[in-house]
Length: 402
Ligand SMILES: Cc1ncc(COP(=O)(O)O)c(C=O)c1O
Picture 1 (cartoon, rainbow, N blue to C red):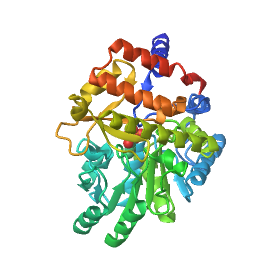
Picture 2 (picture 1 turned 90 degrees about the vertical axis):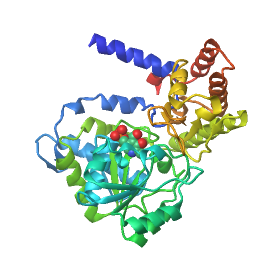
Picture 3 (picture 1 turned 120 degrees about the horizontal axis):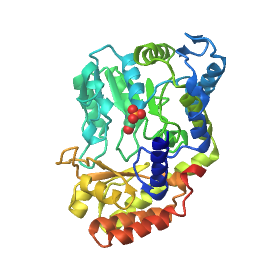
Picture 4 (picture 1 turned 30 degrees about the vertical axis):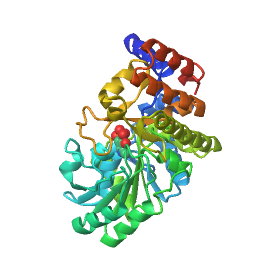
């Protein structure tokens, strides 16, 4: 216990003293952390509310019903499955509900901003299904006409949209029109933009998609976990049996309780303010970097990509390591048309979901952009960079007080 406690203390210091710019991370509220660490972890509840394989489920039944109801109200849909342990498991269950083994999915490849579960050879997805991919245009944007042409040629069972590293708005209506034209199902993985959708700052996929999957721990700011939504009476039955008993056993009721709190928190006006500020901060940082002379993408959501190779003459991996040395956490990422391997990459993915939760404002975002620029350019020493990080983070809310 002592050993683990010491390591948790170290991680707390790291989180408090650092500038967290990994676009998929966030800081859950004290209530969410409390419930995730509650005695609910002791309970087995295989099955669904009212239909469990174990006794003593009266309280967890009610908790799971609340989580389902809150998810449906937050996103304006008919059905939710709140049991997936992660976004990857949510995607696995969604694929199974949408098509037979060997079915064909048209998606964006990992290197262009898709997720591992969107057909990567190292993921289960490409083992169970056939994947074909649509490219981005030369500006790194979706080209709906190209998606349409490929869909007409490939006749997929499912068109998948929603990504891990795409900085622009996705036109779900256009994708639905393509799905209708080629007569296939539409799946949206909104893991990254779920918070923006909840706050109505991004068009919702719910009116268009057959199935929407998500994680609850990125911009949505909940506990680590997955979520599946649908409006279809037929698909929810398939989704439920794909989650349990096909892919998972007992649900994590402590996490489901925390998901219920997350969905409630996301319906508050404060959450809309948070998302507004998150998007403003991201834009401020990308624009400041561009004004200073770096090559960064524009942003219409919570993240952007920075081309470190052409801006500073270093790979994404080198930039990530350098920034980590001063307490700024980012992740290396392929940039559109990248010539380097995914292990090295030519750039970074930068997002403001986590720091905005701690109180980062637009002027901090500008300072962070200048810090990244000056440090990667070699204009300032490691010592001065560390001082700036300390100065910025010392004004923010400590993680344990959130
Ligand atoms: C778009 C997208 N889908 C799914 C996932 C998978 O989530 P998890 O790590 O919870 O399996 C991620 C995670 O980064 C993601 O970016």
